[in-house]
Length: 525
Image (cartoon, rainbow, N blue to C red; front, top):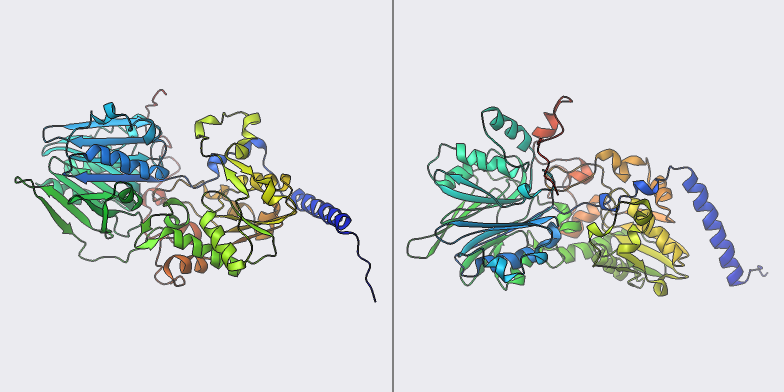
């Protein structure tokens, strides 16, 4: 017996029509945002910050600038460097990218000395203003000190209120300034002991560097949420947020700074450098941030001894095992989804292609806040590679989905390029909770996972044919090689699970009467 079958082209048209009708029915049951709601910059987990410091090297400031260039992905709003030449401190702060300013030899000449620290900034606490650009510097009884840190203090506002109530004057809205005040108020005699006394009062996640007249001090939070590594160049100690900053200057990786550890490097009178390590008496288990592996760290970096690239690739492989789909091509959402897409393609056997091309030369300031230009937002940064998409069933691999508005635009762009099906696979779990350790996340009610009660509703909103996220165990296995230990989690994963590893003093102690504005001063810009 023979079954009648329509010609392939006619059948294809009927299937395409049916998919279009189905999507229209599905999407009519959800409320789609207007163009004004498609804030593409708000639909991402923004960068944190990056720190770099070196002691005793004749090219300290130049090497710091190069290190910050390698850490540019961690913060693109501003950058700053402080140096010391044995007589006085020098400081240069600039809004914008490292390469826009610190490639100028004349500028670097203003930062003499053999010791310096630097910082790339994305604001999670404090407004976008020059006064908040780190390193922050203060004159103390024992001399000057400059501080730079990556992360966020979960009791910073509480301590800020306390010190202001006792007569302190705050010049910035950055939580880093609180540390300077605590150092100044400490009753200890040495700068090192004052610094340690100050940070022991801080809660949250941080990787911090301090520069004095003779010392470079590095500290990491007790849980080890934020990364910090130690390196060496020409026998001189270096500390930075990621190993990629060591690679760019040809420095040797020594080890990670342990959670809760403080390392003091000091230039001695004879020119030698001493290194002292101070560790917590009761060390807590390390819980590095999972999003360093999912999104933040550069793929060529090592975080807590693990390759970021391999972790992302293994996440894609696990995603292919958990959420297989029949398709013709695997396409990454660049650049974050690329390693996971490679892993998904290798595990599934579906060909990998660059179906989306990213324009790396579009800055945030290029997109004007008008409805007409905003509608082009995705296409300004991403273009569909029609030759690899038209007529194919596409698996789109992304590293994470925050609000989902960018996903809506990208799915539509892929369909406009001729894809017959679009299946989204996300190489991390759903995000349900906000972060308070240095990641700028939207309010919980704006997260996609909290706006829709099930996966099917999310898929309808995005307009895809199917949607799946990597499980928390799948991500844990990709990064650490084993499933999540629910009794004692190996990583910081609160954005997925709600399991915050530290106290949230500012959040839990806040009342409805507390002012939302930290400072009365607004810088003209």
